[in-house]
Image (spheres, rainbow, N blue to C red):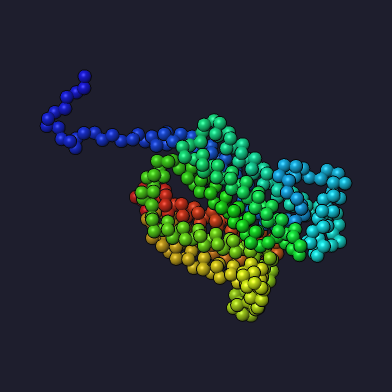
Length: 378
């Protein structure tokens, strides 16, 4: 029999029903840490993939395999006859006829193995994703609401494979020595989108769902919005960097801060129709990359100054790390231009973009989801 309540009992004295600590996370279920470790493995593989892709481009290896065979293409040539057949296909494309005529079989094998390795790494990443996703799905260990997110990664990976071939196919057309720069930018852009989603998911899974809900209430809305602007500008600069790489524009105008002695490059609009200059004129493309870099750096300084007012020490540190990498990346970019983009420096510059992208996302994440701290930590 239930206890009778006194008529003198105050309504405010009634105990409040509160959720037990960890109830939100218990309800969502899943192996958050296990999935996080799996995503961290994918994170590392995608970083390697971006670097290998950059080296494939810098060594002019991307057109050495002239066919797209998602399954049977996993096997390289196994005999002299098969190598001869692959080399014969390469001899038929414009890159060989106009640029590499007279290349030996040994030289061909070098660029072939670069491109084959690049494609194999893509297949391996897809396999790691598939095995992990199916494993967690069958074991019913995916937290509530996370199945669509993890499926998105697989869908983007599949799309990236298609875009990769779409890019390569452009370099096989008549008169082409390289792939189309806008297709290269699309390919790299999707790689950074995938990388960004994985990084964001890792940041989320590193904390409990309840912690994230509480942290969001204490987030700095204005700083988060500024962080979003910084993400957009950083991504734009990455795309412009891909356009520079696509036409080797980084090897033109090796002077700084001017270009051939002037602020604006000479004859920037000679190509017709005029829109082609924004993708194919080495001077104009490098100029756009420089100007976007200056804008990004100035905006980053403004966001960083705003972040210094944050009461949360971890958030301030995240923006400090972002700003330090932003400055370092700018210096590497200038050195890359001055030395006409040798592959050793150019690949460091690309790796710097990867690190900067992760740090910008991390800073934006902590603006929205600050890590709880004691009063002494303020």
